[in-house]
Image (cartoon, rainbow, N blue to C red; front, side):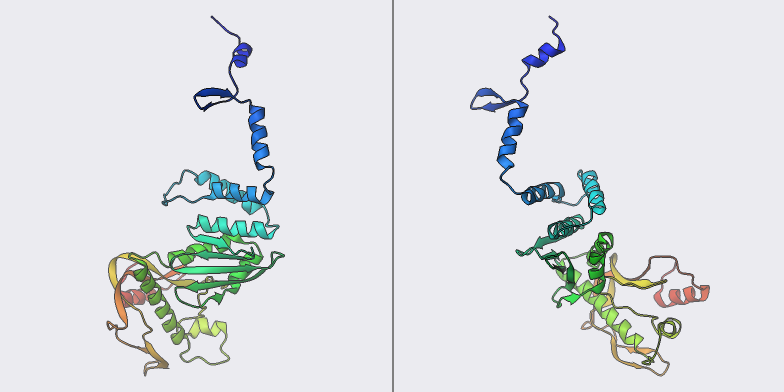
Length: 310
């Protein structure tokens, strides 16, 4: 027996669900009316939070190609297009960005502070009621929080891409094999190296030295402390640390006893004793974001000092 399309549609119920053994028919309009009545008393901000949570909930285990990747990417593009026009949307943006970088975050009860945290560092973002960014503080391990002017400027300009890149770089500082204690030792080694570089920059330095003189004649060039981000014009390199498959002896304390140079003008370093160093599955790196021209004699000298070949 054949039946027309319209006749078959009339016989089929729009929606069914099992209710205590009986089949109950609910029309689409009735179902939508029930949903409307359920949520009409809730403020719009709560609905936004619910949608934000459901769509941005991170995976339990990181994977290279998460199934919700296209959805998160789409949301990211939408959020980039829309300017943050309220305190709530700014906090939403920071929370979403933190989840994308696999970091934890929470907003203070007052709604004016956002805390972005990991096991090794945390960032405080403080805003006023009118959405103006007051300050952004960064703290590593047991260190006191330090205000990062560059991070403040990125958020005031709503440059969330640059802010997210810094979150990534901070997380990468601790991507070395081992537990939290080993990761902390890796950061301590990097911190010790930075202190020695700063001591070297003070050798033969006069008060009226300018940046050009530092670059051309200084021991380490023009040195900018790492406080989350460095804004340097022109060519630059970044000192960092990365995990390796083999152990390297790294300092966990500064090795320059004082800022006085030796007879040949070079600093005097302390030996790598057990008290001042340890074996870690990591090594120091000097990274450049763009190619830097270098003479063959300089390359040969680097190879001779480091034992590394390019």
